[in-house]
Length: 395
View (cartoon, rainbow, N blue to C red):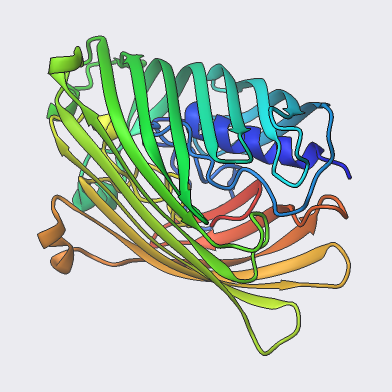
């Protein structure tokens, strides 16, 4: 079997989460189509977000190398090119279990954003342990819209530049079938500066643009009963994560970030048609840097149809559903819809405006061996029309 698509998805997911534009992104006029290849880009406080890092397909032994140049165009950074070098390998000789994956990657874009990363996702002892590690540097140029739904509605932004270094690792152990839990640690160093500052007065959120060093232990858990990671037709996956930044451990700020998600998949009465749903909540508390505040349209389960970072606040929730159909060959299609909310607290979600989004797209299965797809989605939100191009499903 050809294992190369596994590496492509892993590296794209990890690189998009690790070196993504920090949550406030370029504008897209109403009615325009803007290619945005990764709905996962954000200033990641959880850079090793790769719960879908394999398939139930049994794979062979040995080592499989990969080199993958990936051109893209993105609402945040414009045209760019990512180059990925990957290696599928095994610490466990039993080929009934999913293999481990390592790789390096780098990218450069037309607005002079660039970055690199080194990562490893290891499965050992018959997949009893899942160990993940990542080191990265990114230098990103982007727009900051402000905080709160009023700032999102105004649609005004200022240009920023943000270099970021981080190292992260996690270890999850299987305690019972389908259930994994463990700990993580993350170190991050970053600074923010105004670009082309011509007398623009920064908002209060940007008063402190000095270098920031952050350190956080974390906990995470996953419960995964999907029959396949790439195109599941039954089962579900639930995850809970928390990171705790503390000055007692050397962090420049004291704050916490939490994320919970649940995706469910079911067949329908129609042949080769499935329903996929997703519920997601992200929250931050404490002295949170502006770029770490959750945003709508960003992250692994971002609501399509909204520029990442335009709507952000301490609590972000989304609910989405997607009807997926697949032809007997490699072609497929999907229609989707959902809504999201941003609010300063959980109690204020009841009065927050509901931001609706929806759209449709086509799919192309990249190999016969794995149901992993290239997707092209057109989505519309409250004021924007966006085109997404990426590898892998939105959830």
